[in-house]
Amino acid sequence: MSHPLLSNLAKKYSIPRLVACSSLGFSEKDKRLAEKQNVFAYELRLDLLYEKYKEEMEPIVNKNIHILRNEHLIFTVRSIKEGGKFQGKVKEKEDLYQKYLPYTFALDIEIRELPKMKNFIQEAKSKDKIIIGSYHNFSTVPSLKFLKDLVQKGKKLGADIVKIAVYADDPLQLVPMMELQKGEKSVALSLMTMGNTALLSRTIFAIYGSIWTYASLGKPTAPNQPTCKKIIECAKTYFASKLDT
Image 1 (cartoon, rainbow, N blue to C red):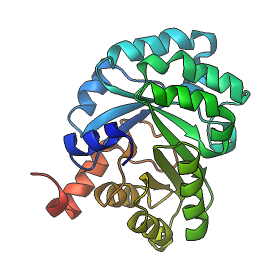
Image 2 (tube, rainbow, N blue to C red):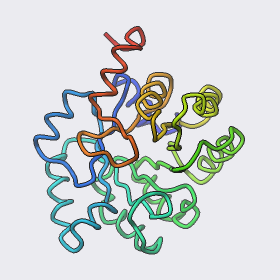
Image 3 (tube, rainbow, N blue to C red):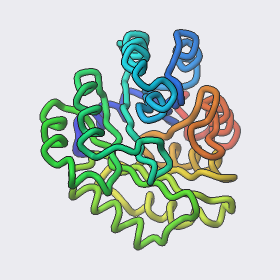
């Protein structure tokens, strides 16, 4: 793991390391709940917050920053092309990331947009921010070759973590992702599926090598996204020997 924060994180937090997701931000109650469920970071989906609140988004985000002031915050502005709600230009997205950079632990930027934010990414990394290069496929699991090429592309473009979320209803479809995680050692990965295998994949990958995985505290932000509670229960039931005691 090239980024020092990732090495420290892996030592400090036990598996499965969870990022809590919410479409509308977090409350004090959410935070108390998350603290009991192995959550170490929180994802703020600025694209979903803007769709809901429009011009009133800023005070909502500021409230979340205050509630989560001592926590790890991941800021995401997901484009509509990859399942999000953001329809603006890349520069507008960059401006949003820039606005909240001081409060950021990590930024989730789609791999296909990394080349367009090269200067901003360099600035963020100079301030010790983690760059997550992400890819989403809501219909299938691509080939192992495609996945390997994607990881190398993300790494080359400055990603500290490559996040891949794909769609799979059949457990056999997980094989390319499992092979990718087993063989890839040059960059940190966060692998997961959506669909009927979401709980299984997120638990397995988080136990066997993914730096972290994503789960909801309530309403999911992706198809079949499991709750943090479900992942912890699954891990304790089927992978107890792998967990820290």
